[in-house]
Image (cartoon, rainbow, N blue to C red; front, side):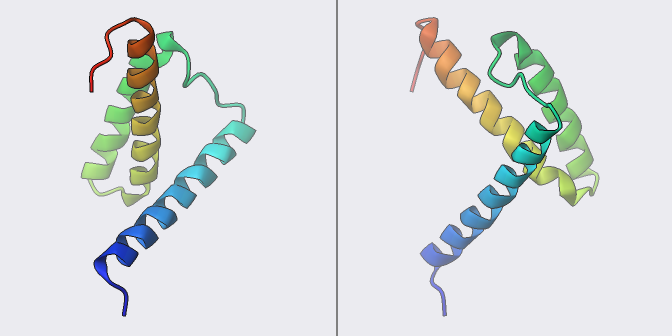
Length: 88
């Protein structure tokens, strides 16, 4: 029987594997731009579209939502830090 820690590790491993697979598939199709500072607004808009779809019952959206969150997290940490506005 697995304990809570093992279940969390399994959950994160499975979910991150699905995130990685989805990103690599998109990359193979030519999707790019997530590291561009001027792409942030598009990321935010797309995140909201995916979130609305998920909340309306489309469970396939959660991996995309996590990927968009990762992109926005990256931008928040690195672009904000470069601009001297980082905060923890």
